[in-house]
Figure 1 (cartoon, helix red, strand yellow):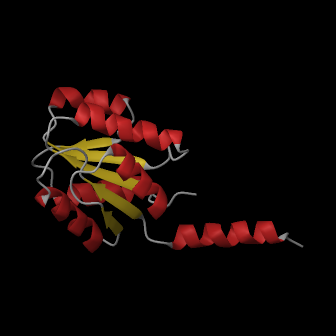
Figure 2 (cartoon, one colour; figure 1 turned 180 degrees about the vertical axis):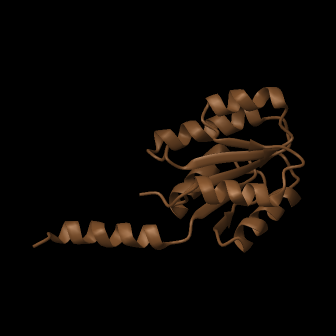
Length: 149
């Protein structure tokens, strides 16, 4: 006979596996332009993902704390300010510190091609640049982000 703990784990695993993938969409830093982030959030929502939008002017701490509270599977970050080389890796680092290193972090915005490899090396899974279609982003999230265990 299975223990109560084993039954609870099995029930929890089944619920997580059957739930929608949860994506937090954030705007780190002082960047005040959120139209693109809202368009991405809407496209992902329309594709069946559960979306948590944090709004403008979020610190890395605010984004990571919201990700923990909302039990997200992925974080999409929109950044136009030029602070991507500091803010995105800091978010990845803080997730690892909170034992949430399995949360997939991806970003987009005005990010020079030369910075993309550096961001990937620091744990950002994917970077989308201007001209990326909404379908490309949806397909990426659908293929890469799964409910966390």
